[in-house]
Structures are given as structure tokens and as C-alpha cells.
Length: 483
Image (cartoon, rainbow, N blue to C red; front, side, top):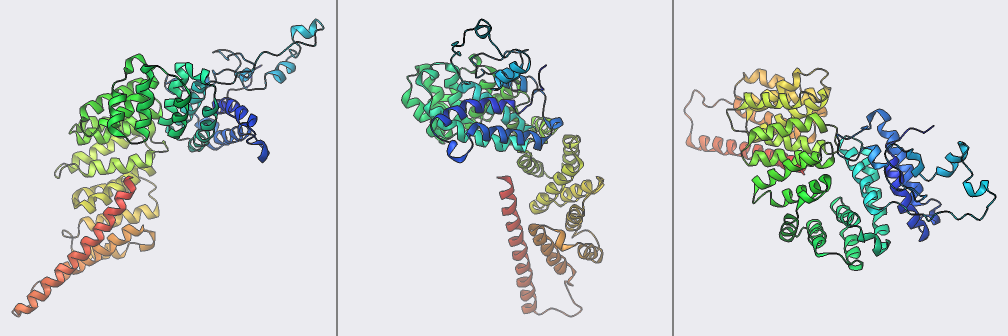
């Protein structure tokens, strides 16, 4: 009887290799726990934090589901193949065999006690990277614990990769894994040390040197080398990684080529962090390229598939900036497009998006879009107290010059200042200041002295300067959110 396959198995299997190498070098034992044990604990915590029902049983054919990630070589020198018991590869094979009556091998049954165990071979670098990619994909689907664990694995894999025998890197899959290691966030020094110890073919030079140039921000060199690679000859997910990198490198000078590369990523790596990143970048790039229909399609796909991603907050901020920048006069269409894109995400996230758009629109001077976005937020059920205060602020501020000043003043005074973010408190102050100037009578019954008029002009200018200063401060806050 086999035990259930846990999604954390990929992490544990990969850790067996790194933990063994580090333990042999004396690390980990001094602290009472080997890296293998630490990874087991972190992986199990990731699984508990996210919950069994929250883990994706498969990732849309991307090749990084639990079954694929568990298909790595076990500590007994054999390989766990599809359909085999995955626990045969988790280092507990002997105890499981004993429990099932298989604890004695043929030599023992025949009375031979000097039977030698087969040589032990841990997982290969390319298999370890598969586990890392699996964690990346879990992060794309909202598992924040997986995001933390993958950071630990990057730190632990580095020293192990550096000590791995040069013969291991003769397998091109392992050499590509070294490039993926740095493209996935690993330190470039690891790849440099590997390249210094290993003789590799010229065919691999463009990949390795290109990956180094990419992570070291040598844009020209990275573009030249990575663009020269034939991605059609690569396995799909690996080619998708290269295409994503090239798209980021050429997005400014050749947005059409960048979009083409991103489309390839979406086709070759569905359900993965690579597709999630391609959609995030694709919305911004398509919008700047003038292809609003494609930007709308990407945005809808992103929210449908990745609204739980650990990077979704960054996307929501960028999404808001895109639609606030749509031309004046298209506010009704813009709101309808937004509603279509976010229709499947949770109500609280929809409210956040509408309020983000309302705030940005107010700062940008598009009062109509500001008011419409605030109205949409208020239509959604279960609006929190703080969200309601924000919506009321944006509604009132968007009609400062249209409604009766007494009504607007009452609306502003009804807002609980303590429920607002500091930046929104600045907007509230600015709204009170502008409203105060609007309520001042422009003329009195008596003729104005020229000096009085000059004084009023100076006062108006001062108020406008303060308002602009407030708006500049809020704009800076919004820029920080976009980072």
C-alpha cells in the first residue's frame, strides 16, 4: 500500500542531494540539523500553511506537477518512474520494504551476509532545478510558503553546485540547470565557478555567458547571446525561460518582437510562473505598443488564472496605471473593460482595484473616471469601513466643481480621517482647501481695489501651489507602489 503523494515531495527529494553533500562537508551537523532536515521541515510547513486543498494537483501540463517533480533518482540508485511508488525515492525505502515483508534481499535468504549495497547517487542538478521550478509555479498559484522555501533552496543549492564533480556537468541538462539556477535568482558567482571548472562546448557558451550577462545587467551582451539561441530545439519550459528573458531585454527597442516572445512563453509554459510573468509584462507592453485589445485580453487571462499569485499585488498596481492612462472620453468603456477583466476575482480584490483606479484618476485629473471607479467600488457587497471612507472621499473630490458646495462640504466632513491612509489624508486636506477657495465670493458689492485683487490672486496661487504639492506627494506614493 502506497502513501499519498505530497506536493512537498519535490522539495524533500531535492534536499536529499544537497543535504548529503553539505553534511559530508561538515555543515549543518554543528547546528544539530542537516540542511536536508531543515528543507524537510520548511517544505512540510509550506504544505501545512497552504493547505492540502490549496495545492494544485497539476499545473496545466507544464511538466512541474507533483508526479513530475517526484520523478527523480532515489538514494538507492534507482529511478522512480511514472506509476511507481514515489516513496521508493524518499530515502525510506528500506523501512517501507521491511514493513511489507520485503526487508531481506535474495543474498540474505541464501545465507550470504556480505552483500554490498549498490552505489548511492543523489538527484542531478537538473532534477533539483525541477523542484525549484515546481515551487516557483506554486508561488504563481498563491502558495506564499513555497515562495519562502524556494529562497532557502537557492541558498543551499549554490554551494552544492560549486562542489559537484565536473563530470556531472557533461550532461547538457545539468549545464542548462546551472543557467536556470542564476535566471531563477541564484547568485551569478555560482555559475562563474562552474564555468571555470568545466570544459563546455561552444554551443553552450552563448547560453551560459548570456545568462550571466542577463543577471549582471549587461543588456547588450545578454541580448546578443540569448537572442542567438534556437529555442525551437529546447524543451518547451526551458525555451520559455529564454524567451521571457529576451522579451525583457528587447521590450523598449522592439516591442513587437518582445510581444511575440511573450506569446511563445504563454504557449510553451501554461500554468507556470513563466506564463504569469509573461502576462504581467504583456499587459504593460501591449498597452504601450498601442494594442489595447491585446492588453485587455492579457489582463483578463491574468486575473482568471493568477489572481492569487504572490506577485498579484504588483500586477494590480500596474493594471490600475494602465487603465487610468486611457484617453479622456473613454471612461465608460474603460470601466466596462475593467469590470469584464476582474469579474472572477474575489469582491475584496475588485474593491481594491476600483479604489486604486479612483485614487490614480483623481491625482491624474480625470475626475469622471475617479467618480465612476468609486461608484463601482460602492456597488460591491461587504465593503469594509476603511474602503467605504476611501470611496466617499474620491466621490466627493471628483465633484468639487459640480455639486453644491454645502453638500460637498458635508460629504467631506462625514469622512472618518482616521480610517484613511496617510496619502488619502493628504487628498482630504487638499479637497478641503480647494472647496474653501471655491466657497469664497469672487466679488463683493463694492468695487475692488487693484491691490485687493492682486492680494486675492496671490492667495489663489498659494492655494494652488499647496494643492499641487499635495498631489506631487501622492504621485510619489503611487510610484513606490508600482515598483
